Length: 285
Image (cartoon, rainbow, N blue to C red; front, side, top):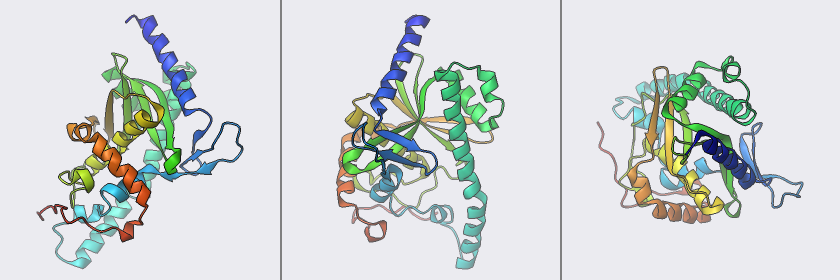
């Protein structure tokens, strides 16, 4: 494929995703939610539930970050003090940083990829994390098509945003979820997941795999778009690390989709859910 052909294909792909998202689904940055409307002519937008909350309710409802991190705690007072310290350390500040980086990455795609502005000028005021993320993707041969791409399942009143849709050097479509930090507790877990994933731990890495994996299933089932590969990309103070969607997700994709759809039909509050009899508890360490 020549450079000219590749650029033409990329332009066509951008038009495709713009038309697929149509005028019936959009991401509301102010309220951080996905909104839909029944037809392009309708004036009434309605917010739909977030996919991430429902994934947690269905697959890892009893995950607790602080329990996973403090499974060796000795006294309640000690664990409470540790929880408070951890909340202060990773709480609002971390979430706000992640939000800022996502916004900057979106601006980069809009200004440099879609509008053709100078890359260096667009990156001048960005955080170091965003610049590292952009540089790493360039090194891997990825090229972004769209960022913060809103998708929805109107029949289930649920939606989400894919952080980035890109193409690789062979012009294969890639779905990417960005995460910031996590280097200290990426594999920390307090149990296994539910449904078809009862042998998979509920650590943050696997949670994030489910998040990006479910987004690819929605693209295929609702938008008829085939995703070639999917990644969770972690950015921290030291490096940028891509983690590709693992084989266990691909092997169980149909079962995961069915479990999700069936779970959405039940819509039970998290507090009413009960642990399945076959759930495997991880041993304390």
